[in-house]
Image 1: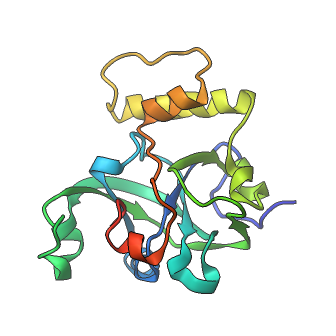
Image 2 (image 1 turned 180 degrees about the vertical axis):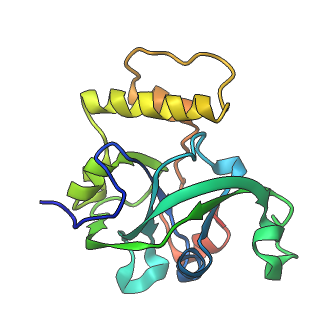
Length: 201
């Protein structure tokens, strides 16, 4: 069963599942058309086709799920102070952030639930998996398709000149793939207290 029709999304589209810390960040994405990722915690490949936004417990009854996706239009490096001018005194105001420009948010026909997931990594997936997913586990690319995903990410990385050396062509164990792509696991469950000062702030 497919999760509705998302304009422009194909089975091979690269999707990055990412944390949307607070409802305010959802409004920024909806009204201003951008999403931020701190450079120091960002995965190496941000040149994806779509973002899928995971909503934590700060969203109350709408927490613990993915409700919205958005097409990626581009990205640039800037500072937190430039992005959030009303928070110029924030401790990380001078730190570099990716500003991911996005198109209009699209609501999934059925939200993708976290189920037993208490922690989240930056999770790479594909349009095919997203359209069929009912839970976060369903977004994890497995088998031969994982190798295709790796090749796609590798090509994007090379196009962005993020890698200065050749990357292996062979099958990559998941733990090695995670390290190469710069994916970091948040070390505590997402709750309102952690999110206000967390790595995604």
